[in-house]
Length: 72
Image (cartoon, rainbow, N blue to C red; front, side, top):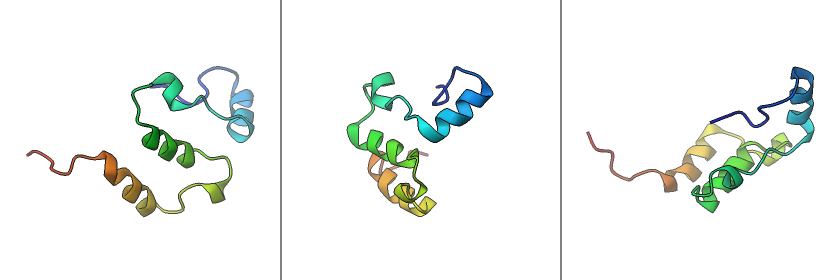
């Protein structure tokens, strides 16, 4: 676990958050399913209109990655 831009000055990080794409998660963690990587990429999209618009939308797409039975 680390932030999308773990190095650089505060000014650089602020600029990069606006202009630079983070390293794709599968480059860091290849075991992450492609679909889940796509969800994460959409959540981190630079254009707010390209992101999920509500938490409910995220819940719906993440449901496929959750166990259907939660043990007590």
